[in-house]
Amino acid sequence: MGLLKSLFRPSVFQYVVHLERLDGLRITSFHYVQMLDELEVLANYEGQNFAVSMGPEGDLCLSAADQVPEDLFRRVCQHMQAYRRVWPASVISSSKRYAKIAKAAG
Image (cartoon, rainbow, N blue to C red):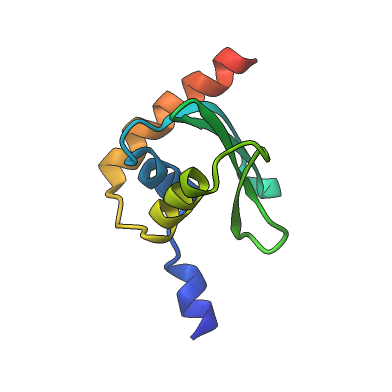
């Protein structure tokens, strides 16, 4: 069952697209190297900065600075945990935008 679960787990891009579904959240930086499982996504929500990174076992980790209000962090966290399917067309168009964001960051 573990193998099947990992085979059908949403991609990094699907999770980031889902994250952007949170009204008012904006991706400000995007860096992903698939071969290395290296991920750093920075986002801004209600004037606060959040980061999404990849843990050692491929899990996504959400973090924020200490000054981010707990209820705001909880709202973003709950949104990530309530993942809803993202269709491939959304991933394709969003991944092109993420590439532009990454290129602009240089």
